[in-house]
Image 1 (cartoon, rainbow, N blue to C red):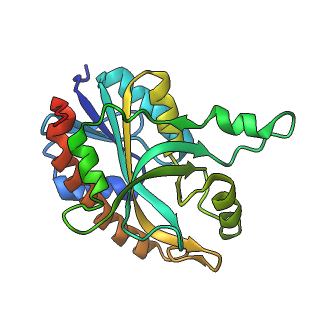
Image 2: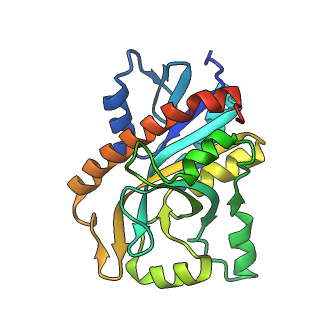
Image 3: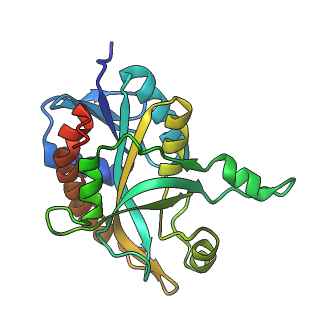
Length: 241
């Protein structure tokens, strides 16, 4: 029988999960149908897998098995060159799945169906002051905003349209599915994604360069874990001072 916990941290990509394990050094690892998980300082860290299919399925599994009242997704994303800086932490306010191709009826209606506005009104003032200060330990900026999702890396030629149509600055593979599932379960959700690499019209700096992605993933996940540790007392106690 799986333990219940107030907070579950869902980690998607394999590189992100390896970074978390290296940083936290859990004493015991358990298995789920989607990967490993462990309990660390009263919080469940759960490897959900990459892509929308794994993200949706593992999110529902985690909600059913652990019954949290808050699901946090920590992970990485690619940024649009010229619109966001590498290392920036995005506190996601809305997700949008942009790789839906609907040709029988209204394509915008299909896009809107899988778009999710995250209700962050429960976040205490203490946290918002940290976000508005735009700093994590004096280094990485924390900014609220939209995050696109698709089962694909960012295609350079798509960027001008995505910026113009959605005012987008970054994209990942899983956030859209995670936000959509948690909202339908009426569970609070917070998504924090750090920019590991930039993509511009000339291409992506991590494309064909996996070592760059892995190195920057370790840096981003360390920043995110530090940020979560900083925010945790306010998230648990609901301190609104």
